[in-house]
Image (cartoon, rainbow, N blue to C red):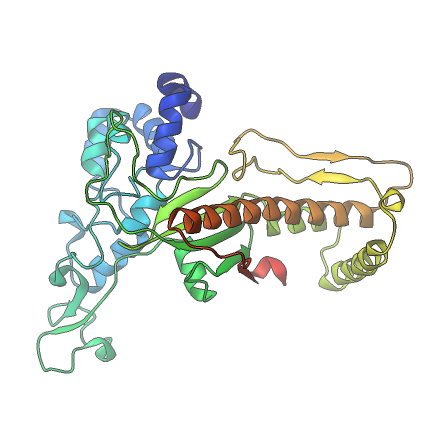
Length: 360
């Protein structure tokens, strides 16, 4: 409901501009509609008494480890985590000004202040002698005999962490992760523009990258962005199939998968007319990339009397993989557009590194 209200208030042109500034489409998965819905249903007096600051799990942990006081909590948020909310002007260094206009005063005041990785004060990030963790974690003490230990790092968005863990930290590798959901992401070079506009009255000019419709673009640090797309249903498709076909045991499920693999290998050598026309669009929980329609539903088309459970399982898996392929193709095009704008030529397609428990 909040997404629909915002679409009506903003109109198509302003909505497109907002997408280009924040790198995130208007979708219920992001913080703007969630915060608007929350504050619209909460009495002002209750909000003030219950909420001091919105923050992240990483910030809470760092604050606790460094001996901070939660009652006076004012820990900054990194550009990476701020951008992940869909409210951060990723070309610049702060919250998008127009987004702030669509939040209540209470919501704006409760937001943490974005702060670059290299500008967070040391006393907020270093474990020191007054911290209860100074004795518990001696490995994190400094070696110079001072009362301050090693400097921790502000939180990083989970997508960026997935790319780092997959060793996909350059524009030559695309990280594909399949867990309950699924995503494909690439790291692209894009330095922060200190003079980048954050207001609705300004247009985006001089930027070497435009966010392709269907993808997101999150700031990682002062020099890089993360471009990609996510599917709400990845490994959850497999769990749904196992549930409806009573494949609770791993042995039964692996037997089905072995048959599906053999069938797929056999069909690769057949003419197109001889292959089953069963088609599945596996939107079990709405759609994120590439259409970002929260209310989208799935489709299973082409069922006949001869259709088997194995056929349906294969079609659902193919559907999920094809949706990932659509995201990957958009990423490749975005990467090529950036190379072209920088007057570079690189026709080599990026390597895809896949991981996640949804693949097991």
